[in-house]
Length: 171
Image (cartoon, one colour):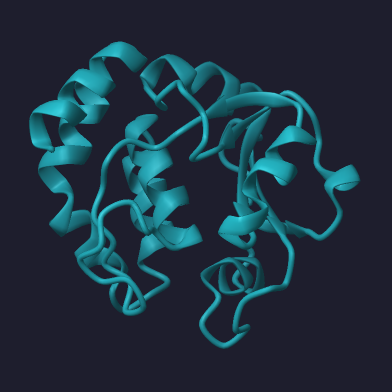
C-alpha cells in the first residue's frame, strides 16, 4: 500500500501461519500491503513494529512513517528476537491493546498483523487509513470500538513516555 505521501506498508511474512486465517496475506491480496519473505528484502530505516522494543509507538514517529513507511512482522513468537536483530530501522512497540480477532478475542497484546497495522496507523494520526485496513475483516471495526478509548489516548500523547504512562493507567 502506498499512501497519499508515498508511505508503504510492508509485511515480513515467514509463512508459518494458516493462510486461510492470515490477515497479512489478505491485506496483500487486497493491495493494502506488500509481502516480503526474506529479511534481506526488507528496506532499512522504516518504522518497524517490534513488540520487543523498549520504546512505544507515538505521534513523534509520524515523520518516519511518512518519509519511509511501516514494517510489520508475521512470524512465530519463538523467532522474534532473531528476526528483529536483523532488521535495521526505527523499532517501536505498540502499547497495550485488546485483540478483537477470532483467534485471540479479548486477549491483551495478542493482535493479528492487521490489528497491529491498524493500531499503528491510528496512533500515528492516520485514522481513516486505519479504518480502511480493519474494514477488510468482519471483526476489524470492532477492534477500533473495543480499543477506542485507548487508541484516542495514545494518539493524544506527545511521545513514547506519555504513551507508556497512559498504558500504565489502563493496566
